[in-house]
Length: 93
Image (cartoon, rainbow, N blue to C red; front, top):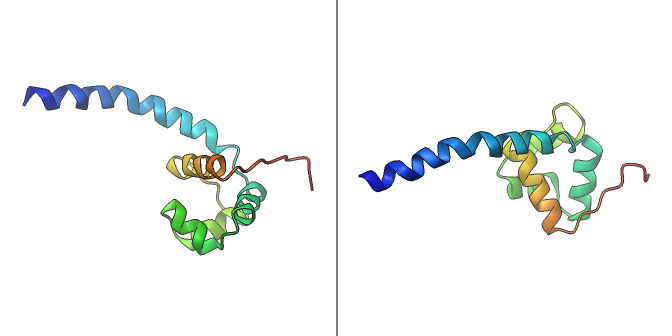
């Protein structure tokens, strides 16, 4: 029983640090960048939603600027972008 308590306590202290990092990362994902990433990966909104574990409607709402991704969704976008070799320049049209 004592072996289980150690990791649980450690996770309790690490979680706020991870969440803080995710929140900071989320501000980089605007509607234009999300749509550009999806096109770069040659995915439909449904395909992108499947990769992120979310709904197609959520991806659509991000792309029109109704909502911004946050938390784990923002982190997953960053991971997918990194693995897909996505480079984004906000100044390029």
